[in-house]
Image 1 (cartoon, rainbow, N blue to C red):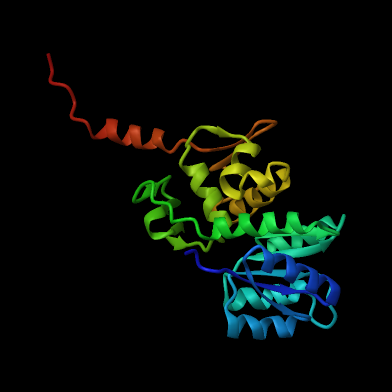
Image 2 (spheres, rainbow, N blue to C red; image 1 turned 90 degrees about the vertical axis):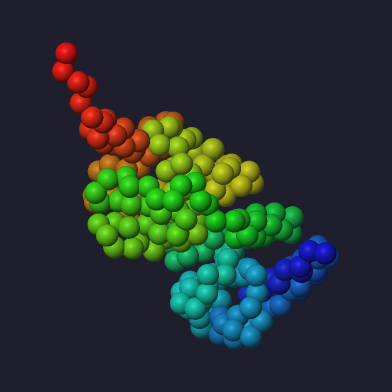
Length: 249
């Protein structure tokens, strides 16, 4: 029997809290609620939810401030509830570590679909395509140890950044479309959310590129998608150099 997942829903609107709670409980989830950020942090420490649905617009401690506090102590997946049309809220939430957002007003079915997709991503097994990939003297990626080293120093990636990097690095030299990356990293429910890819490509470049404005690893193929530099060419060149010279005739 599958384990029941616990969802913490945080919003200062009692009617919304009640409606979401009833719907998610009918879908088989255990639901706990909080009406403000401080209460949400207390519930996080005592109940350890599998996912948090967090409203942005709350009195005293707003959703962004609450998210920052959550990320200090936990990597629990967070879905932000934002006001429709506030693109800056969406970008800010994702940059602070949110896993997704849903705009108000929303349907219960839409929220459920996003919860299911985020939980699936959180439960994905670790990727181990190869033990260690040396892209060049500045960048080494070790998927078996979940490590990315830039000039010998470990760089901390979020789970979403890590999944995106995995799919790029696993296809060196190959163009991956926005649609392909959305399906592989976020799920088919996100095929219309092209800005997710652009935003997280920017985050990755800021962490691994020597000059994010002029990337040498994650390359943009305008109108098509993105391509990770083909590090296999370096490996082939090194292999050729290590081959013994043919005997003189």
